[in-house]
Length: 149
Ligand SMILES: Nc1ncnc2c1ncn2[C@@H]1O[C@H](COP(=O)(O)OP(=O)(O)OP(=O)(O)O)[C@@H](O)[C@H]1O
Ligand SMILES: [Mg+2]
Image (cartoon, rainbow, N blue to C red; front, side):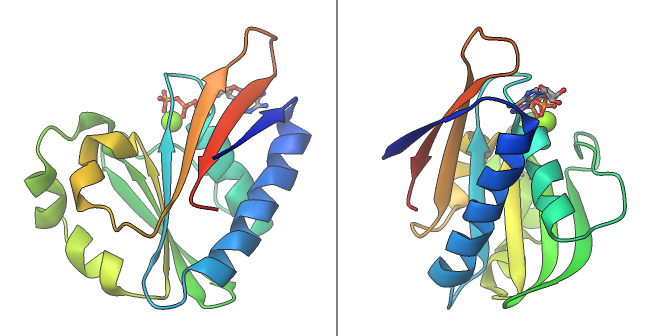
């Protein structure tokens, strides 16, 4: 486990870039899985927005709270799709399987970022990056615990 202090959004951008580069090297025979946890407003969506900027996605990224999942075409190493999932409203892991999550995990071209990942943790592969975001009380500052990097 590694802990990182992210003072502001510029640092979050740098951090997102680092996580992308780790992902390219780590996920060579399965989909890339970045599990995001942390309280409301901790910065899970903000992190995916910085990932999207780094991947040159032009569309505005908003939390897929009601649609659960959104996909964007990308071209970054082996990754050809960014899949942004918000598991906040998921009550049973089987709901994710109905949405085709099992197939998404099998495709090496997918980079999957999951907000509220703990809600579906039983479905996630052992090989994953986990980022646990916390508010520190200093207005723009966040602390992130990193597992699996
Ligand atoms: N260093 C930082 N890291 C992350 N977010 C920051 C930072 N500084 C400011 N913010 C702001 O904090 C807010 C974080 O909200 P965000 O929607 O990303 O939280 P969330 O964890 O996705 O919450 P939810 O559980 O509701 O989905 C955003 O408005 C973002 O711009
Ligand atoms: Mg969010």
